[in-house]
Length: 249
Image 1 (cartoon, rainbow, N blue to C red):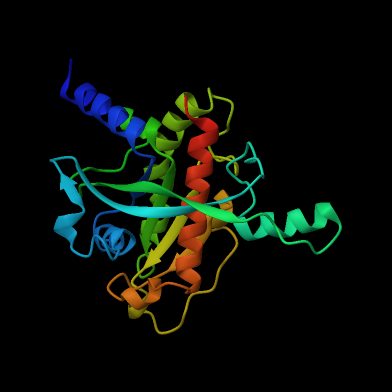
Image 2 (cartoon, rainbow, N blue to C red):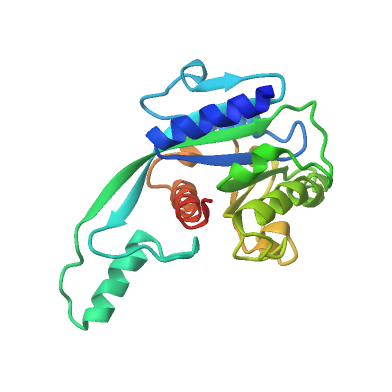
């Protein structure tokens, strides 16, 4: 049995005991993937990088907890694009036809693992790592001062999407289908720009139907609780949980 197979078996054993979602971080070397992962994984109970990180020659993995909201008495939609918890509340009121209170929400704790490929790994459309099939979400990262790094994301994402399509959808999904695995696009180096960038048609976020946020990854205030960016990340993680529940083999 190979080292990877041992590792995969151990991950499956842990996942059976702890609810876990896995997020793949992709992008060119130097675009800020490590800083972004630090920002995404930072929490009150894991305030330091050493308290939430494991790594080897190929991957750096950081982890945090995420509270996934579930509305009482409402069944989950069989699509990862299901409504957010707030939308479910509105739908509950509309279905009933009266302003009754929606059923109470409860939070389920999920363990979120962020997988960052080491910078020595190069992008390739034939990159078909077996670990990709277990990913429940993808974060694409590019440098807004170097738009070629956004163009390269098409090569970075092709192999992982193909692997997920074969193992999670049984080849039923097209590679760029908008109902694929949840994707979040992050533009970094916001602090180096003179003006805030406009959201344009033709970007990879638009092509994939994905949310996009702009960050200075060294400024934690841009990801503070109740900010717009924080809300988008939480929504993305909720969709990753939905995707996992509806597409696990």
